[in-house]
Image 1 (cartoon, helix red, strand yellow):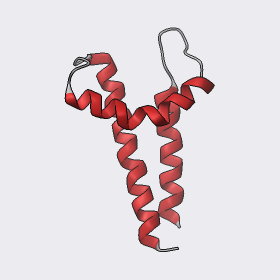
Image 2 (spheres, helix red, strand yellow; image 1 turned 180 degrees about the vertical axis):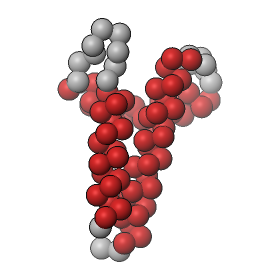
Image 3 (spheres, helix red, strand yellow; image 1 turned 120 degrees about the horizontal axis):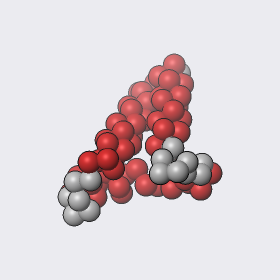
Length: 83
């Protein structure tokens, strides 16, 4: 396959990592459910976070699925950048 394709996948993993991170920060700050950025981040990250939430249970009030998502995305980005 073309190396540009794998670089693009690595870039997408990095962008999704940042989206998950920003969404996690927003969950602490709570800018509101009608904020356009909050809605966008929810729509972009929820398809990736929802399956992880079914696997990883909450620990008290802490949701560890964003942490798991960031770790998975960083591993994928590493492998895609090495191809």
